[in-house]
Image (cartoon, rainbow, N blue to C red; front, side, top):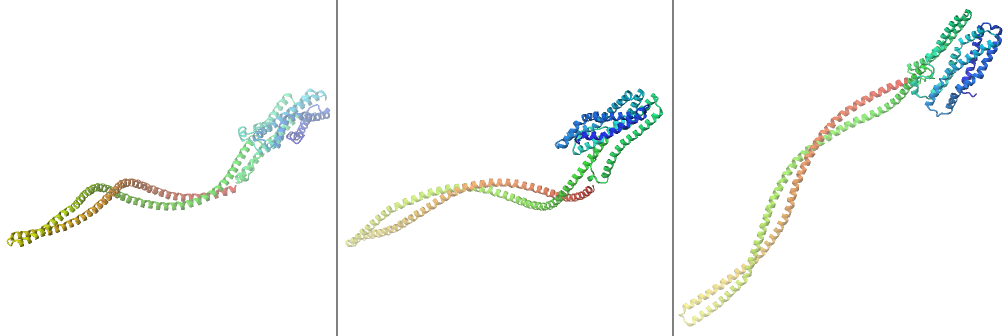
Length: 565
């Protein structure tokens, strides 16, 4: 066989089984009455039966019990993909093997004892009583095969189980079942109670059957020795658990938990479960220490950054506070200026309203002026037309004056001729002569008057011409004034429209200024609150800086503690 779990358990059990069988059979032969004549053949037959049972009968039974689990263990060693659930199930199966093997060896020993008793009675000539006595003596110690087998198999199975438990298992299954082997009470029953019960039964049966004290006392002493040995096995096992746990707890108590190794665990009984819980505690503390160290490093790094940021934040908040105060002061100035602007805008609105009113009034006056200019233009045109008509009549008057002048000249000539005729005719015609003189004088006056009229007509003509020219100039000026008035009217329309728009826009500006003033007032209040909050924030950053410093000190203390552990 290969060095597998099957072969390991079988090979390790052979010496113990052979020794147990030889000792118990020899012990039974020694105390069986009437065996001395056939002691040698009995010993030989005992050895023969033991060898047949060990290598012919027990080997197939051992394979039947361990072959499957041995193959699974071998597969788990070669296959790294075995998950923790499969490993946990395998641990459960391994820890059942000691009980199965103990029952197997116990039953085989009973069968060997029956076979040996039968052979002694049938072939060696022992009496039935002696054969029963041999059977009774050997049976009284048969429980030792069961106990020793369980003890040895638990050692081998524990070693195998410890290997699997190191590679991983399902904690939930362990927490549910606590352990997979025999409980401490069952072990105590196997190691101690069964020995006491077996010895008690033996004494009772021996007394009832009337065995001699020479047989009862040695067997009782033997049972006491066996009981003592098994009690030692039981308590030494508990002691080994206790020593391991004590060493681990001492290591923990000495702040060496970081270097404390986990207890080997086979999940065989309640103490193993306690060791499992202790291992969980150690792992939890080690993980906690590792995380604490990591957290400590993070805290140190973070506190350094936080301290730097807090200092920067503090200086920044102070700068922001100063800046906010400046902004608040500036906005207050803007607010005051907006109040001034608001009053100025109110004045502008009043001026705009007055301007609009004046523009409307002047526009009405301008329309009246334009109408009067139109009437003046019409009157001037009529006057110029009249002067032109008068100018047109002057040549006719001049013709009349020329005619009168011609008549006066002729009259003067006639008067002169008459005067000459009168002087020649008769000196008595003085009256006629005077008349002629008067006529001549009248003609001269007429000529002078017509001359004066001519001059006046000429002056009137010149004056009419100048008046026409002046009138035309006035007309031109009036036309220009009318055009200017029309343009001025248009401008006044624009000015009127602009005045209305100015008034409207001024009112809109006034509303905007009011809104802006309210917003600025709200902004001032908000900035004041911000400034107060910045002051509080600055105080908070100072507290943060102090807290960070304390946290760094605590972190250093924690680091020293974890390093000690």
